[in-house]
Length: 105
Image (cartoon, rainbow, N blue to C red; front, side, top):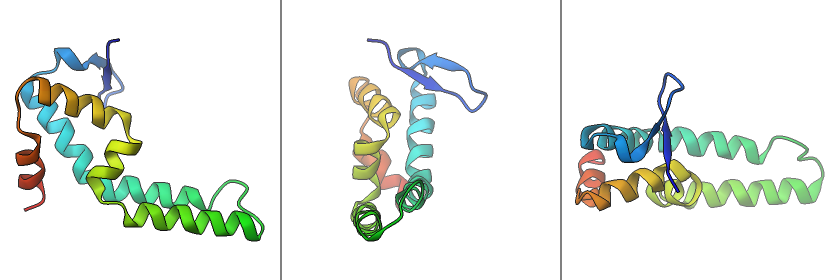
C-alpha cells in the first residue's frame, strides 16, 4: 500500500518519491511540532461532550497520559505520517536516532 505525505500546500505526494532531504525535513518538523500536537490533543480531552464527573475524570486521565508520554513515543503512537516517514528513512539507511539526538541538542 502506497503511503502519502501532505505538503503544506495541500498536495499529496508519495513518500517513496520524496528525496532523502525532504524526508528528513518532514521528520524533524514533526518532532519540533510534537509539543504543539500534544497540547492540541490535551485540549481535545476536555472538549466535545465532556460533562459530568466521569467524563471529567477520564479527560483528566487522558490528558495526564499525554503529558507523561515522551514526544517521540507520542508521535509514533498517534501520528501515522510520522511512522510512515520514519519507516522510509530506515529503509534508506538513514540513522533516525542521530536525527532525533541532533534535534534535541
